[in-house]
Image (cartoon, rainbow, N blue to C red; front, side, top):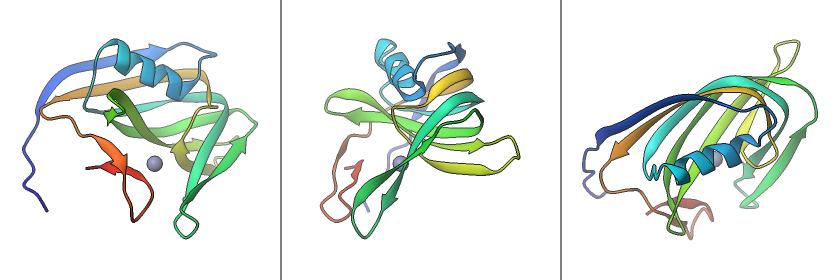
Length: 142
Ligand code: ZN
């Protein structure tokens, strides 16, 4: 494995995203608008519905999971890197229903915000760049 250079902490953001917006779209737009090219994201809140993906490692394809119900965003965790020369958010989410049962997966477009409190820590250094990995067929850091 290549030697990893350390990063310095850059700007730190803590903010609320508006009700009704798409969660992944809003996170990506924030990173694009503020030119956050590398960083870590965490968040909590609630969603009006959700769409998550599960990556089938044998088929090497994402399978969509649609949740048409109100949910707690028990945990949102992710990172920001560069894909196709633009800031790209990769996030996973744990969602809880009324009974406290959880579903979790890879966040995709199709999760409507009820409320979302977001923390983003920018990292300063050589941004990670995503490209398709031949073995896994995932967009990984090269
Ligand atoms: Zn993922």
